Length: 164
Length: 447
Ligand SMILES: Cc1cc2nc3c(=O)[nH]c(=O)nc-3n(C[C@H](O)[C@H](O)[C@H](O)COP(=O)(O)O)c2cc1C
Image 1 (cartoon, rainbow over the protein chains, first blue to last red):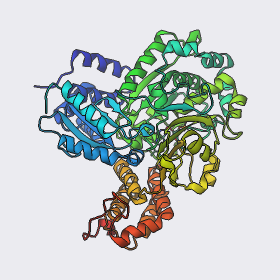
Image 2: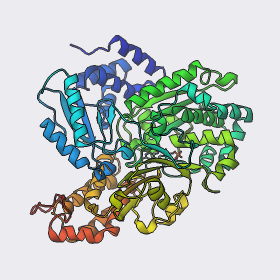
Image 3: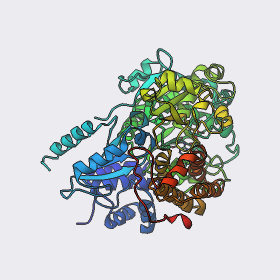
Image 4: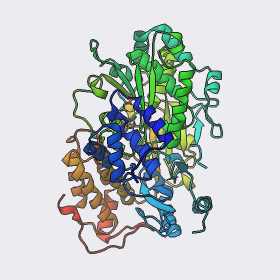
């Protein structure tokens, strides 16, 4: 099925376009919107965005591929991004990563078979005063301990409605 | 479940910038008004744009984004006679590892920053302002959009700000996870919908900036300071800091301190006071091994620097930089090589790839540092690292290259014996270090 924005998505698109004197400037916010609506930026989605903004496909591709936060592959329902930078490293991030790997049975850059979780080691999340920290979808989790990670994973799993 | 950042005030009572104590919730518009909100905008509208700009110049406010450039001087670079619109762009990319101060405003107390944006836009003659927020801050971005809408409805933004002839729109713009976009010209490229590749300068953004128009780019905390200046005047602002480096500063403490968090104190507060009085000293009172004073790119200092005053000039005189005032402390028992692997990996990942010395050099440094940590180091690697770093320094379009090179130079110089020991014993001497690999010579010979 060809991608198409939802009604809400259309309203958001209109709002975004009103913010800039040049519609190219709306591209990154619109790509965020598209990854939210369609899960990730497949080639087809990028073509759709190019069409909607009246921009060359190459322009959209060039921008989309530059930014790590714009997903070019499917992610788990819960995308776990754990900080491995300095402040978190000093407060035990390595142990958190190992624990996540063990609990989820996947390594960084991978997704569980049931597509519930994907894992990524990321750079500084600006949570250094509350390190170690991770981000799951839109939410930050800070001052992590192994026990806290377990609680978070359990809560996420039960909110997904399945025992995995 | 997301926790608020730890916030504490140096002085009893509310700080000038940090108004919230740890448990307190987000400041709403009503609450901001009850705390005297928009007094700065009202005062500015009476003073007139030129007088506001003069006040900011007299306040000796140095930009809080890292470089410490005087805000008033930067504003003065705008061309006087250009027919083009002017833009104000606020840098809320908060990407420098160790730094978590702007998040306080973005997540919990946005109105002082937004008020500072109104005052600044008025002073420089901008009718449109963009707030470029790092993309990871999804929820703060949604909250900021609502805050801006509230200001529109309340008559603080729009065609007529508080009934005056001055009109302003503010738009919140999300980034997408690239550290380099914190560099001001890369930020403009990104805001225009392009990859975040820094521009050659000159022309500087004040002359040719966003959409080719004169543009002022300032940091979030700088905006909160502008609000304070418009509210209390330049003299009082200067008195809150140093004569040539005015105002209060938000310092961040992270790493091996007992009480990490944000602390507001006068610009020029000694490092010792930050680490021991505010931070409560080190975990288990272990001796300090290193202090990164202002974000990951600033050269590491040692305990002999504890009496250095934390202002732009003093930290520079001590051989490092105040940067963002984000202090990361680590104690004895920490492997310096392993710590540097994190920094080297970061810069290698974040290089935009535009300039060869940075693109190739950051990856090369990462491989050499990792090889040393993993026991594959070779004699001469320390000099190799210094040589790569020195060939990056000053040879790139933007300062990301320098930012990547400086910590490598500082770590190798300060902890050279430890690097050599890794090489000599073929592994990491620290317990828990991963120093078992042997054999494979690393890829350090060629970029
Ligand atoms: C690689 C790099 C990353 C930067 N990241 C940030 C950032 O995240 N936030 C910020 O305010 N300034 C950052 N800066 C500094 C900006 O280029 C610019 O100096 C600053 O936003 C100007 O604001 P100020 O004068 O108010 O400090 C960065 C600079 C470089 C070279």
